[in-house]
Amino acid sequence: MKCWDPRIEEIPKEELHRLQYRLLKTLVYKLYSLSDFYHRRMKEAGVHPDDIRTLEDVQKLPFMYKSDLRDHYPDRLFTVPQEELVRYHVSSGTTGKPTVVGYTQRDIENWTNSLARALVSCGLGRGDVIQVSYGYGLFTGGLGLHYGAERIGATVIPTSTGNTERQIELMMDLKATAIACTPSYLLHIGEVAEKMGVSIKNDTRLRAAILGAEPWSERMRNRIQEWLGVKAYDIYGTSELYGPLFTECHEQQGIHIWGDLALVEIIDPETNAPLPAGERGELTMTVLQKEALPIVRFRIGDITTMRDDVCACGRTHPRITRIEGRVDDMLIIRGINVFPSQIEHTLMGIPEVGREFQIVVDRKAELDSLLVRVELTHEAFSDRIKDLMNIRKKVAERLQSALLVNAEVELVEPGTLPRFEGKAKRVVDRRKL
Image (cartoon, rainbow, N blue to C red; front, top):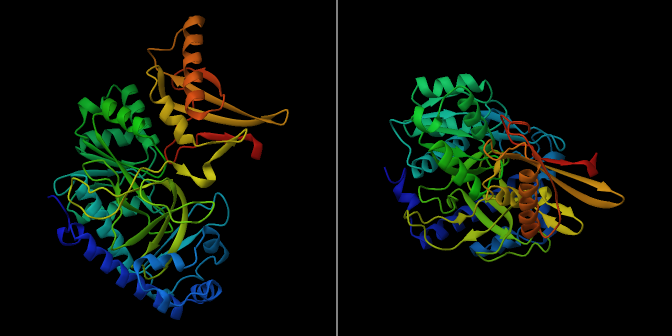
């Protein structure tokens, strides 16, 4: 099956733009009439629904921020009564008050269909057995992939996170062909499997991995594919939008954003000006068909670029490149902007370096310091001081060249850094402690 819904996935771009405009116009009128929040924001910005005459006029509308969701906790931004809701999801709230997202039945249907399109574009369908190792419950990841997988006729193993040895046993016994989880958890599964005497590549039927919820580099993808023998696909979404929504297709050349569900902008995070395709900036999204919690020009905070070339798969919807990091994840080290994804990309290009690392930022004598703790591979780890000194020098030089800032490098034995069953937490910023 090439497409889940060819009629919409291969829609001509001009027709897609007309559809997006109609949906945007309807949404803006609805919010101006039904939402006190958006009505007030539009009045403050001096914009009326009648001012939206083209698709580009979305730029006239005010931005929405995560703080708006927290300030209106739990449900004061909802535009439907509670009796029309069929589900809530809630963010962890680790950086502040949690955000609550409500769903109508139509919202669940749109979310499910989005993931059905996405999974089919990765080559999955009826006959596949998909192990969903994202968390279930208030987190959106597990249930989102679960519903999408069932919609395409696949069989689901709802393992959630944790109990890794049992997950590997089920993967083998139930003949899983695909897994959905974070990249860091898949790496952990691979390591645990090896300790059990199991090769994911040779002893299972796993052929695809749907990986997201944390930034990961192209070099990390290459390592996963070579080591575990799976084709690794990037998935994207946030709890405020719906949850996981969009993936790469089998071409692995950018994440398809379904234009009938979302209108994407890339903006300069400092000036708020729109950026053309090919320029890196902050992802901003308008969800065009959401009923319970409409989202207009939401400043997601993720850093990416828009692609303007046509995908070889034939799908006509916009594409973004993999997420490079978040605006608020950026580390400023002695005046230089550093993203953890840059460090990962550099380390994954060094054969002696293993699959785990940790970044420690501190302040010593009023100066920022950057320490990168790096696991070595079993083959590279040695008792010979000279060998370790040469590797450390190589790693430090590669990091300095990539980051334009000096980093202290600490080499550690394989298996000594923390492993994660959910999102990886690789940055320790002691300046904030």
